[in-house]
View (cartoon, rainbow over the protein chains, first blue to last red):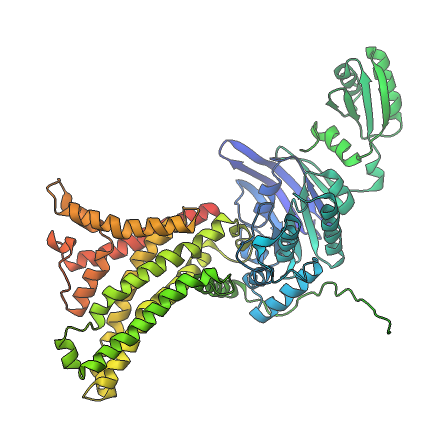
Length: 304
Length: 294
């Protein structure tokens, strides 16, 4: 894991009796990484641990080669963070606020103001930068949040649900901005429960479910087409059990099964299982949103 | 017509200096001063703080003018014109209003707007943040006490029959007495407003609560201290606004009035302890609150 931007080893965090993260071990390579999971899966807790804002119950975390527990300030000096929640002061202009956050990262005031203007230009707020943030729309506020995360030229940015609350056009623009960050040499971790966003944006994915690591690996075209979605007429649970008895992963969502991942022999296995249990097959095909299928197959339910 | 080319300015990496925590602390102090004074904010945010500053400065000029009108320092004293110690009574009221208006604005909005999550993602600790906010508060609110006293001091030096520098040399004690008393006022008021601003959502409510605790609460405690309730004398210590004034009388050797704590037999050093205790408890309380929020 020597070339990994983030290394997590045996990470566990509990809030009282609730386990938010359970024995995570993973490495995140350079590039754009998606952190996927339902609300409450532990994504935000993991991001806050990466920043050194939350001290884990157990385990070790290294970010950009720094041990987070030993030197959190060194990590924060080179990391940008875009929180999911509202975090903008209504009574400041966008230019002032972004310049201030640059100064908080240690940039001299003159440089901070220059980079504030440049970064707001980059996120498409050149004309609005002298308006007060209280007058901004949701989309503009999300852009300011992204601007403050990158204004100090971080080596890594952690984006927590960056497209949250945006309309489809705004979402596409935000995802395009995030993709561009990778081209600037900034490594990105973007957390989302919208899997299509991750599929469009990322080249590595970390899946969390109820604090457990479901998967950490590359997002490749081959893996995107390895699940089969089946709509069953009859007892879907019995078909699922028959498939599981053959060692095939299955997730049940009502009468729909997400089967796999696996090769083309999955189709034969599904037909055999349906015949064995007396169920009918209404529809069967490769998953359209394959990441969601995989998440269902591995975690049991789609992230919400 | 010429052909135009649109260039994407893209993104420029930054390889200049990074000042780390020191730069972050300086930024918080600067932002704190701006927030207190309403600088780089909408015009309505400037009205109250600058009005109170204007009153303080005009009053300083008036006090100096009255001394000049009296003709000499001795004549001014004979007429009962206020000097360093007595002047605190007037300026502490101005400062009390100033702190009520600006103190909650210094802390509450960062918390209620969720901005702390951004600030603490930078190389800035909770202690850095709070110490820098306190520095901004001491800098601006302290000026309300110190600047008018400095104006009076220089005015009296000009008026002195002994000459400007002879007066300054003969009154060097003012240089420590005024700051010490100012710090006592600022510490006790800052602790109370800090605790309230760390918990209340609306700065206006925190301002009202601050005035209620300091003025009304202090007055009620002072009255109850002289009642026949068991252990009533200890209530005098809750009249927090009296302690810096008792300290002021003690340091300047004047007797402006008999405060509740004095009426029930507490020595002036008890007020020194009370100021330190309120300031200490306030600081620990606010720190505890913000460590939970970070």
